[in-house]
Length: 149
Length: 184
Image (cartoon, rainbow over all chains, first blue to last red):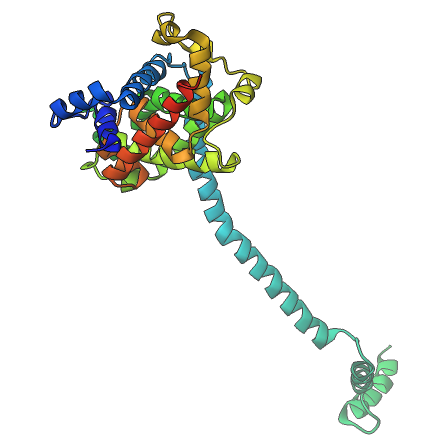
């Protein structure tokens, strides 16, 4: 075994994961290798420093902020879900309204000269063309009307 | 029965009391894990919150056959890696930056700190600097081992690496640190 393998054993030993296999070889190597002894001693010192770190207390507000974050999440999802249905429905209603409005506009509004002519002709027809049955009846009624008055 | 697996099952079923109990049980561990890695209390607080929100949302995917601790630290490791990646690809802030942000390493240590007998504050400063200079994965592996007290197998599971790779990382991290501690 070379130093790399012995250092692996040393590292395992520091972590409490050394099963003891190769103990005699490791001890023998450490007795003769200053580099690995130094690695072991400094690693042990580092581990001691690392473990001596005192745990910090989390801020008192952390628990409530975690709980709030989790409660807000589903609400937002629900809102997104509701909006996901409502917004397209509203948009479809607006488009439908615009389409219907457009149809009505085309049917009834005097938007072009052609349409205006149609309306004038209709107005003319409303007044009964000369010689039509309506004209005849209206003429006779007008005469009668005078008599009735 | 209130073990971790049972709490996770209840959280997946929508029981808020179970989630509250789980947070109370692991909040301290999560916060200190992130604080050791970032050195910045505000970052540790934000990451701890992200961690528990992630646990809450993935409770349905948790399988009780796996130890909860491994599940917990797997998410914590991923969050740490993302966070450290965002912080200029470093394992953590420099000591100067940590001090600027209000971190006082001396105040977080016991009075009977063995480091004092090995060279005192200078040794401790070197150690913190050596930790901060480690590559991201090495630092996370070391924290999982020392702070999280995970086994090599659990670290491998948490980091998505083989046990052999984890062992190599820990040895190399220790060699790097020893080199800096032993510098004359």
